[in-house]
Image (cartoon, rainbow, N blue to C red; front, side, top):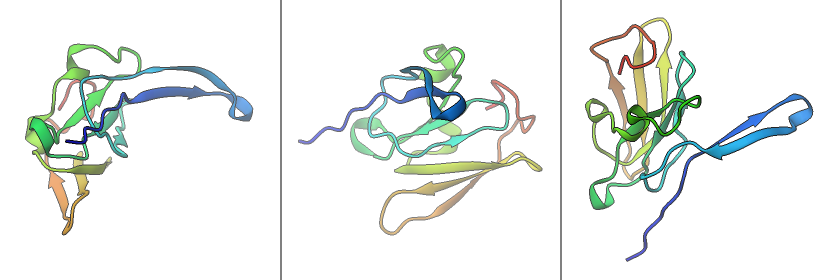
Length: 120
């Protein structure tokens, strides 16, 4: 069985595209894909698989990348082969794409739409 494993990485880029810092942002996930930025400064890393119990979205805080929140799947965002996501800042509603054939566009309405750290 082929197993894809990766570690999402944060790269901080300054002026003239010079890399200032880089570090592992999260671990324990597999086959991560595009993800998406939140309006409150965190990042979603999304598992592009449904193998071995994976296929979830994780919210990563780049200032504290290995905290409990970064390691906890957002189960309300469902379980599927995740591709990318984007939040509508005017409503707090998320739109998620799937990496499968056929693929679908999903709409996720959080219980807490305050768009702040820990709201999901």
